[in-house]
Length: 638
Image (cartoon, one colour):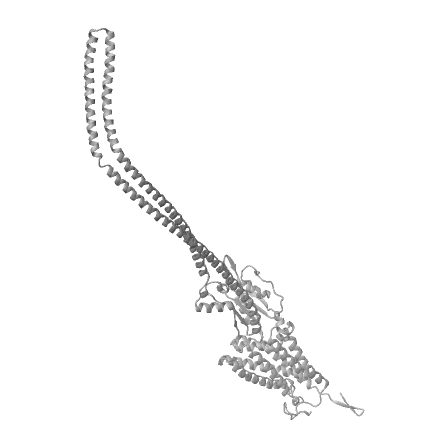
């Protein structure tokens, strides 16, 4: 049996066939639509199907208490993520305790979990991303309302899985940034409301200070009026004092006159004393005569009572008593009259001068009284002015105190910031919450996917360059199994070499340690060998249809590897293809996890065994030869 294509170099100008069968044309026509269909089905508008991506949120936040209210911002933020809400309340009163699952197609399917489960799901690829809310989230997010020096941005951490699709980290960043931006707006709005409320407080306090200044002005005016009244009263008091001085002078003049009139009074007093002495002598003589007569009469009465009749005795005794009383009264009268006459004579003699002095004293006293009245009036005016001044001073003091208090409160309400405080507060107020992205090392999330695609295309190219079923050995006695193994061995070797070459090319982007790169290169060699066997088997067993299937496998792997937003059916299909365990193997190897990497060789070995079985079946089928027979001049296959 002669091979018509013998001697033709693979991919050469004479490679291929000039005769194109209908099935080939159909396959060639279907290839571009299949590529467009798979890519469009899987990657059309990924942002409209974010709900197909599962992510986890871990809330380790400790709520804070402000003004008697508990503010669990971490719980509220997690609830907003899960519910797909666009706002998060910073007041602690409007957000639900736990948000219901979201049906928003533009939001991830978030799962509320703990740190342990999140780490496990991230490593296995169950969660495309894990958002962790730290314990200080609420305290940091609300620190903007406290001291400027202690203001601090709240931070959430978004960690993406090395096993996630290519654009998943960007999608996680977009979703997280949208949620944090919503919380930023709420916190900034709350902060600005407090700032504006502070302005209102300052306005009220400055208004109070203005009122105090008005009271101060009014009190100063009243104080001025009282001072004027005090000056007027002082002038009146001075005038009264002058009048009092003139009256005092008149009093002095009157007293001088009184002194002049009193000069002859001693001589007159001596004369009065001489007259009184003479009168007293006469009175004494009369009293002595009457006393002597009384004594003598008493003797007569005694004799009469002793010798005379009783009637005469009684009458004489009565007359004696009367005489004795008269004698006693005359003596006292004489004494008193003498004293009175003496005193009256002295008084009558001094009275004219005394009256003149008293008149002068009275006139001076009148003037003094007049001056004293004026002095009292002036003092009253002074008192009234002093009272007005005191009232004005009191109002001034109250106004000054109110002004000082208002200005002090206004000063306290107006904060003062240092340059560092202003820098810190400006940065925190502009973005109170930030999301820190923790992605796998550079290249780990992208280059393994590119390597898988390159190795799969390399396997397809090998299947095109080499005959899937070596026809030159089909008519020999060599066993089919040996023929299949020889062909498969060469293909596997080529695939392994392709794997090492691809590993060397990706090293420029990955920058792995030598030991890690050796594991990565070994994994890539195994994958290249398996992919070569699979592409050979598809071509050997199904021909052009098999090559078309290989093309679809590569496109499906690429589509599912680009984004986790692909439909569930496409994601399930991609997970069942050999490219899925191969991608997991390369990613684990790039991350230095040799155990997980070579733990994925099991499914690949199963695919390799299946590929060998298909190749063996194809070789065995090609060794069945039809012998033509001649019937009626025509050759008929027997």
